View 1 (cartoon, rainbow, N blue to C red):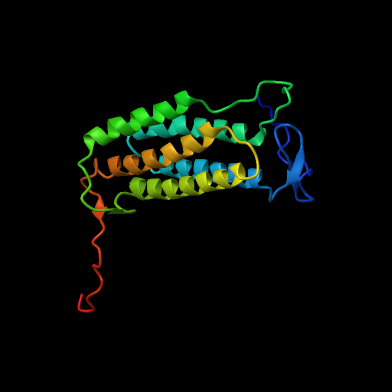
View 2: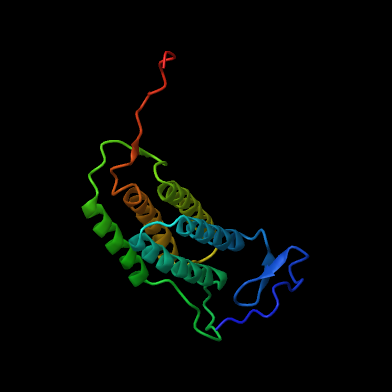
Length: 193
């Protein structure tokens, strides 16, 4: 259980923060950047929920927001060879599998694409596309972290699969893809338009 009885601690005033294992690192540390971007993604999903998407999308996104806290918890406790004082929370294959089930279910309802789609349409869909791009950035920040430190591979896989899910859910929010705005290659090449 987490208890927050004081929001400000002043311990970060010098530009450092604590990881889940108690180690102090600069706020610019790649691990902090990675889970900070995951936090940003979670906030964007909150914006999607605020515009009132369908009950199906609300259910998925609410569960995903909880998973993203799990991602942050996983990332804030570095993996080491030392036995931990407690078992840290780690992302699991099952969490990724749930995303894949949702992707498969959504894809069955959608018409195959004949073109790329523009990040547009309904307010919920447009915001889901913003979430998708933030998710890709979070994945990239985690990949940068894996170049210098060991990271649970399920974190990277989860974020990769989540960006795919956010794409198909954005299509669901566009009347199951019927209101998708298709990219027309070279549409503005004629100055006479």
